Length: 331
Image 1: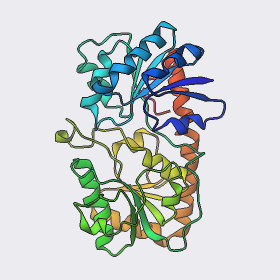
Image 2: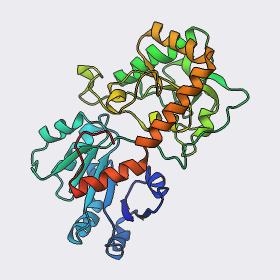
Image 3: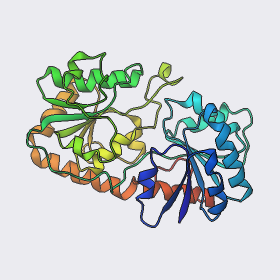
């Protein structure tokens, strides 16, 4: 099958790696003729459009619509960037809208002044790509834990994860290797001192996770209007959750309501905790019981490969276009 990819290329390699899929990248308005040349495409996909970017993309999308190509938008940074994305429901150039946070579906509907009953808004979580996210041997100098993350400590959810997951481990003497941008974690010198270089994003991120026996997860996402109610009302978790597990790493994460709604089970696919005591006890169990670590990694990887790859997300988009997808199912 063939799909047209509009603008941002962040997830493009992961979809292009799906067997039998051809991705045609429409990068600028000058590429608009590609839509005509590939009118047999199954759909055209745009990610994280903002008002500033819509000017040239609308022209391309209008052409796609005239050719009968389904037009899909996916907000992959909800709820953090919700206020920048909500305008997409008012755009007549999209036939289907997806959000990475199930709980933003009703908010998109409520805040859209021109909501159309036929307009579809569905949950589409992020995922893993087995081509890029695969196990690698543990480094000889691996630390107890490895964290691949930017700080984002201005979000309460992120601050809570730093305070209740990362800092207690350091305070109890566990070793950590941190991969983040050069200016990352300046607000937390104790955590920043563990930085070993590298970037927070790499398609072949297994090279980072090889530097710790257990990966840390702090991907409970919330912001822009959600924080005052706390962060238990979000069903979004970043791609880190899926890529860690696909890389065959045991993971200790800060709790998120997203996990159970995505089908994960605590202590079976990975471990999540809240609070200093629970975090330290879980860390000791993970490091002291190698058999538990191995079993956790195998079960987590197996579950992600069965339910949470970009091939599953592509299938969900296609079923949505066909009218057979449930709005809040997790696969």
